[in-house]
Image 1 (cartoon, helix red, strand yellow):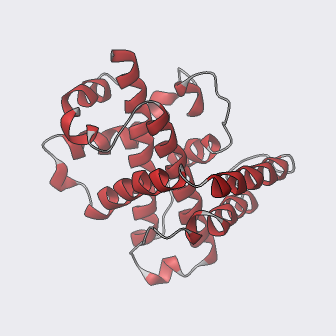
Image 2: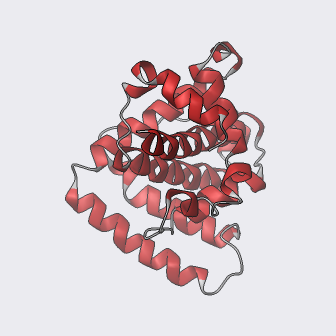
Length: 209
């Protein structure tokens, strides 16, 4: 089912992109906004017509997820050692956290309510990258996913992680990563596919969606 694997590759690239961006923030305190913005926008794309539309549409999806596609190819190919181990851990943790979330109806409902609040916030700002919007998404993560029994531990330089703006960016990207993991599951993706469907997914990643 080539079409499904192509869509799974898009979601997988988004997961790894979120994981890599979290790692960069934790280690360097730097955020690549060009790659962060489509991920944060995806949180509010709850009724997108196509998988590509979740990440900017048919023509921009490829460039918007270029970082994640590169990381995913390295992880599933011969360059796994070139990827920071924390990035791989975050990606697998995002998939695991989402698997816990899908079984918690109350938590899903709470996230839905918070999404509505963030959407109303967006009416007052011109970009999802505005620090107040990022703080709103961070708050959504804090009030919901960070209270679950399984928590993602982010390791890095405390000088950066203790800065409120950086901490908000990290939590917002973790929220975007869980969004991507949810999409991955909805498209039929499973953690074991990273091993047993590696060749099929690699083919789609190399085809650039």
